[in-house]
Amino acid sequence: MIYIVLAIIAFIILIIAIMDLSQKKHTLKRNFPVLGRLRYFAETLGPPIRQYFISNNREELPFNRSQRSWIYASSKGENNYEGFGTDKDIYAANYIFINPKMFPYKVDKEHINHSSKDPYFIPCAKVMGISHKRAKPFRPASIVNISAMSYGSLSAQAQSSLNQGAAMVGAYHNTGEGGLSPYHQQGADVIFHIGTGYFGCGITGEDGLRYFSFEKLEELVLNKYAKVKAIEVKLSQGAKPGKGGVLPAKKNTPEIAAIRGVEPYTDVLSPSYHTAFSNVRELVDFIEEIAARTGLPVGIKSAVGDLEQWKELAEIMKKENKGPDFITIDGGEGGTGAAPPSFADHVALPWIYGFSEVYQVFKEKGITNDIVFIGSGKLGFPSEIMKAMALGADLINVAREAMISIGCIQAQECHTDKCPTGIATQNKWLSGGIDPTLKSVRFSKYIKTLRKETLEMAHACGYEHPCQIKMKDIDISCGDNNRTITLEQAFKYEKNEVQFGSMQELADCSYLGGR
Image 1 (cartoon, helix red, strand yellow):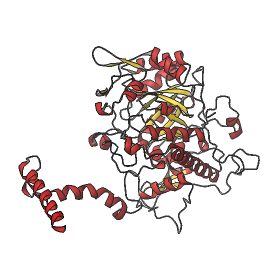
Image 2 (cartoon, helix red, strand yellow):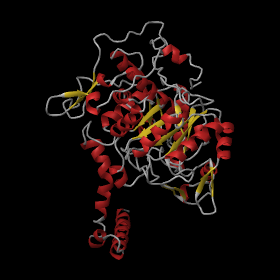
Image 3 (spheres, one colour):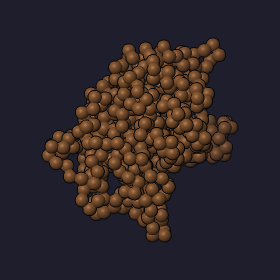
Image 4 (tube, rainbow, N blue to C red):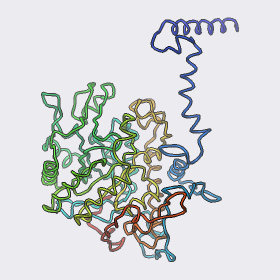
């Protein structure tokens, strides 16, 4: 019997050797038949070996093991503490130090954030659309929400898990440019995202280009799902600003095609530009017409580079009291979508630089309190939220952190449709391993823990709400010269004070979402 097995193995090896010798695509396999394949096998095993056995807790990118472990533990309701002190290099350049007060903010028994009530309650301190007198203003019930991720990019089970979990904690769910799917409509507030492909709110012209339709948008956001609370127009995204995208024909199933309003099993293009507008003036007019037709707050999302058109936008908004009700700044750190390395590595500023520059443009015009500022780009940790809000952000959107909370292992297979955890794939077998009933709870626990620890840090600094944090409350290390400077000194501006009365006032607001 053993000889038969050995003969079969020898025959298989011979076939492989013949295949390697006869092909011309790979020189290594042609020169070293069979053995040459070991190189590709080792290359495949390299990333997981480094991730689990070689890299230290703080070494990996985009998220190191320590960060992922904190999210995993938080989402499972497990002990997320660390003992024996920090293992971070606290003397490294750009290290963040949050400065606590000698006497922290005291949460009495009657306070809404007391441990016996709701220690996770942190709504946005601003109301979207109130300054521009929109018909349906919206105060997000959570300062942490789900960033734009399309159905098609993420699986149905992953979207359901996130939406159901968001509903549990009052967070909103941004649809991404792939349109409003059934998996975005499972209880959470929704921000409908308009990309250059106008999926769900556009038509395909005879020239093959996609064109926006106000009628389709009205039908979608006013009649399809009552919890669509705002609309976001994407100008660009951090991973690949100024570059479009493609949904391959094999992923464009009849269900996805119906949601997007395109023909199934065809390549679907998201161009790098909009056909509905081509300059700042037209963008403002486009925003105002959407707001007039729907009554909803309308904002924009963009990565940051050149500032001239941001200055033009701020000038129009100052003079006319028109334009976006919220602005989402996406960091150039990249995100869940596939992108060419040349774009992901080099195009657009990282979040902290891009946001601070844009914020100052609107600060100079004195209109920052008319806008809700949203940050997106690896901000899903308490210290990062405090830093972002000190710089002027009002809300945080999380994408990859949300994926990690429901099981993502940072396999970095998002672009291959072979995500092993079933999150970033349309493979039915792989995505079938996700149980939304369980994963939704995990996401909700992550958001609760994130908000609770952020709130506790704000209390340590003497504030009731994180929106009160000032730039002088956070120091940043200068590195090996043994000096620290405040964010105010580093970025050379002072955040405008956000109008805030009390947490109870926010809880009693008639525009509060999450209900």
